[in-house]
Image 1: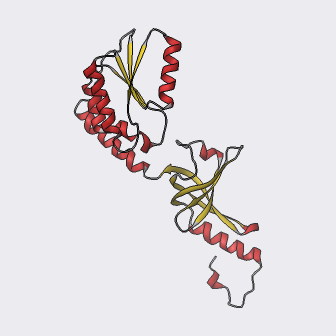
Image 2: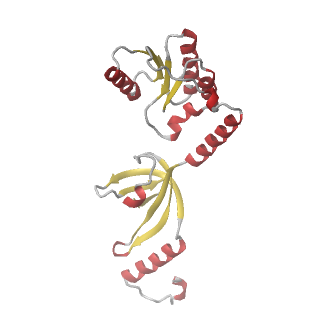
Length: 238
């Protein structure tokens, strides 16, 4: 519906105006992708997600219904920058509009995944992931080395499970940064320290959960090469 078709002296009811706005917005934007920051995140017990998307100057209401939210591979929270794809919807009785989101990813995630896949193909071509390079795990390791954050939940889980499964196994922690600047180099150094010291039979390299960006240090080329060169069998626990 084109408002310019109406004479200038046309008097609309509120309902008529909202209906025109609804037709224009929903007809013009059958699908749209927005980038913004999540705010006022309000998950509902029904499984629907209600929140706002904002940037430095504006905000828009958003909803992601349960059947779409079920496919999310991250946990939304206030402050997370995302790319959200959906359609605009106008609720006529209140004259409000929102975006109904059908797909949402952490902003920049697509480029990061593409970079990781390219790195994987390149290193695979060098043979770094060949089965012949994999070292057999000892059947009954006496000492396990763990390269991880000394304060993280991952270490607590490893210690609890090890104690429950076999109290005779010793655990040596090689503390490292697990995210942020310098983390990859720190991980590499501790893998090398474990090999130089030869104090453990198997080495666990890992951390707890996090966003794709948080996990990036464990995908850095220097870490992959350090693991491939390790004489100690390495278990990835990321």
